[in-house]
Length: 133
Length: 309
Image (tube, rainbow over all chains, first blue to last red; front, side, top):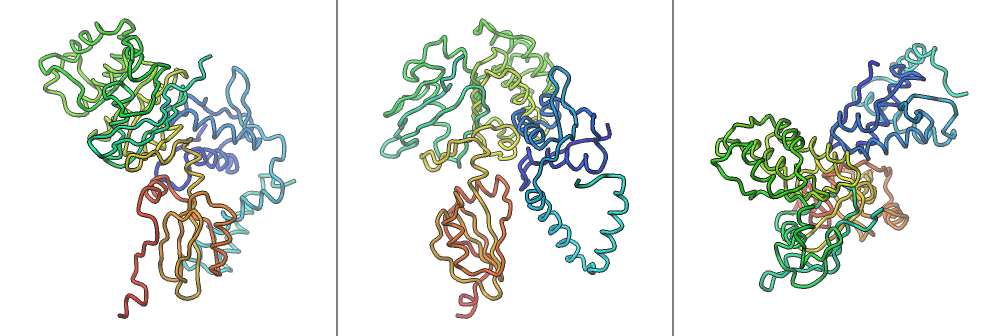
């Protein structure tokens, strides 16, 4: 599994959120696939040197959001079997990410046209990943 | 199952002369948590810890630790508490192993494996003389001596003070390791918010002898919010805003850090008629500093009126 979580303290993002964000990112970029195993709460906590409850909280969120599943005695696995976000909730989560990307791009003087093209190109690279329903 | 808190105080107060060092403290530390005890220098943390351990008599108020009255802590209970302080008494002529042997005689529950685990984790040679140890190595030895009796409750008074980054990391790793036993409680005072973020479940904040916060870390983080308002011209003067901790004025914007941000706060901010208003995430350190810092408006630039007398 070519997947590594790193966390930083002093971030505006709480540690549990850093963990959930990275697991989601690894999933949507294909670094993690359905059936892949994640480290146990204890192992990840000791790797990252954080309180196990923080990792447990992250895993609880990922479980609630349908990305992982804990199988008794076997470990924690990536699953994805149900649609978890309503359209509205999805937008609420997506919008700040788009805003951030556009904001960065504007700060670096990219034009609207360049951005549109870059977006199209990226979408093209993602054809193999099924989005939405 | 024992669900009563490992530490509970009610109205705990200690005066030094006419000055209260700790005033009316109501503290509750749940079993099995990692509890960070925070506050600026001189806010009363060490005085509190010394009272909890029966090393200092309270002026008034009650306290119980592991179910025992802190005014009459029996040795049996004292042996279940590990206390790590800066002034740990060590004999310079002993070597590391001898320190362990010496200490172990006072504790029936001494676990040699833990002692060697900790000193190994700090890369200490068992034959090294205490007087030749560096500050970090000394801290490692003290931690080993404190952890080997397998205390139910570990009290660390500013354990990170003066440690180099490697020794510091070893300390935090040891604390995480300790949480393997879910019935063990760690109560530590610190100024290192990065450590707090890594290891703490709960925090308490003492501010000038008074307890201001005692809750899960996440609750504290969620209760301090930062909002940025943008204005076309010079921002308006800052009115009274419910829960305002601090306000920062910059060109064309006001930034507010608020406690318990709610609808009333939102209405007060909307009333300023900003062109844009957005939540800006805040890190633990900034939240902590604005909580304990001076309340009110801070300005990094001179306002126009100040600039043109």
